[in-house]
Length: 278
Image (cartoon, rainbow, N blue to C red):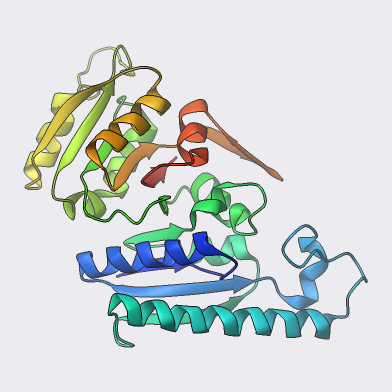
């Protein structure tokens, strides 16, 4: 399949997200598809608060369309520059303009993709891709990757494991990313297992066996402190590239509500990429 990068060039985080997606595509020998999505100008009034700050009747549709065309052209130029820098040819990477509802565009692009990568600041309330990230993960229940704050692409993968349904889905749905790593660390918080009566599927040893069946050698390390900060500290100590973790919380219109661990990881000023599933 392919690695998808949700990309509209607004700043450094967007470019960093595109670079990280390109690095994944190269490592996994997949094609890269950069999807630049903007709202339909005819429906722009529904996107008050986006980078266009459009109110009903405030700006003519043609003016909005011209602004979107300018942004799209700038994004395409940046895409071509980055692809030349990372060494991906036109056969290996493509740029696609998608006009419509960004949430649905992202969810559609994520179906059967090897990974869909959002820029880091898409986890913040001010980024226009935030609703697309939330909808893809929380409503469509598809796995997402949020790029890291650094350009690290060579460290181990950390799996935040508590035996929960969300953690299991994150591991299973991101198996291809885990298999592409040089090493894997299972991070376990003390007394942090979601134990279930009559079974041992939650135990780290079960996950170690699952990894071994796929030719992946893993090790278990205990977390210190709260799970969120413990994962970030462990990632910093190991110079990890990626944290695979379950996303806890729920979606509500106009809000971005997650549990403490997910929120800590998403809002950290210094963090690796995050592979999340709900």
